[in-house]
Length: 185
Image 1: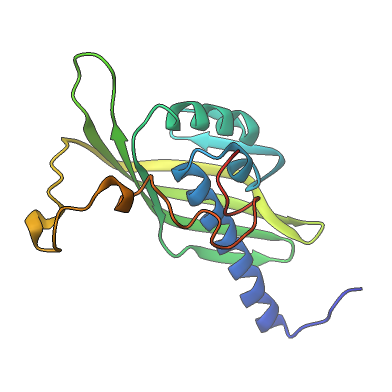
Image 2: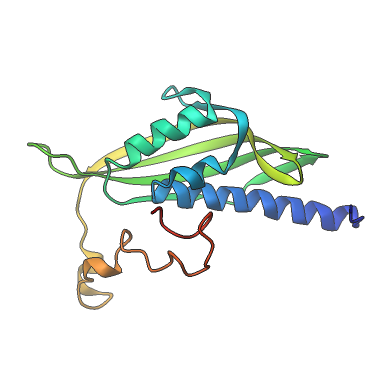
């Protein structure tokens, strides 16, 4: 059964559904969750990632998971996307910042790598669900720096234990849905 809604209300619903895809993508990247990342792309989606990858969404997810699993803490932030709706197609531009703690074995010391990018997406609604049909990521800037964490040099209270930092994640399971919020098994 199709529900007829006011076009402006439907536009708000569609834009929120697209923002949920971005939220799943960031969460999947931060937790190196293959299933969650893959859920953001339609089958046959195309992904062009600033010279790092040009191919299918599926092969990008494989590449990304392989890289993310080798890193320390990660944090991906997508700013509010600008979304143009055209029926069952939407075009979106979203600014992004990605933080990666690079911890390697051997003689290299850990360092932080931060990227600023623009993400240009074409979303399609298929069978009532919005997902990415094609994506182009353009890196605008990048900076590597030594790890210099001080946790505010005590300004925020005693130094936090590892339990309070990003990888020990109490939000896993909080919402109760495996496909979106629980850790991989």
